[in-house]
Image (tube, rainbow, N blue to C red; front, side):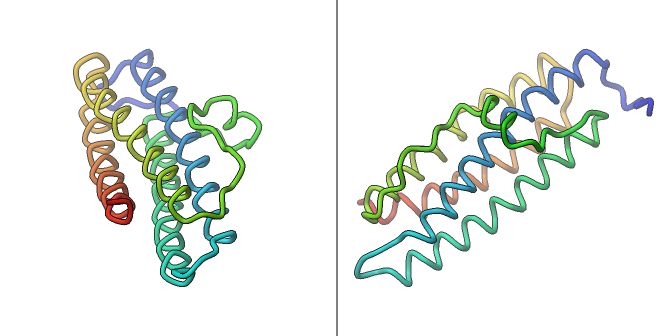
Length: 156
């Protein structure tokens, strides 16, 4: 299908490539959060169990939105786990059961994504002339900032 939205194919491909890398990191963060939801132990079990569920539910929505944005600009979203793992910059260490380690690990991953999103906003707008994708990931930035803040509040 030919896409004519005022962005060159070369630029749409570059944006799709970056969005697929972001999609991969979101999958890693989703899986890690879900795993922590299943393996949390400690005096605040239920509180963290619910917090992680809220966060992985939101991350599932983010994953879907990123995949749909990739399709919107005329490309395919990567959905194969083995390929997502190759594209991801986040890693998946052994799942700690200590609440403080889980929270710190998730907060760090959100901050890594936040820093990347800030860079991509500028690239998408200025280098690839795709203000729509820049605006889209600005929304994702706000989502990750809020999730990181909620996690960070448990560490201080």
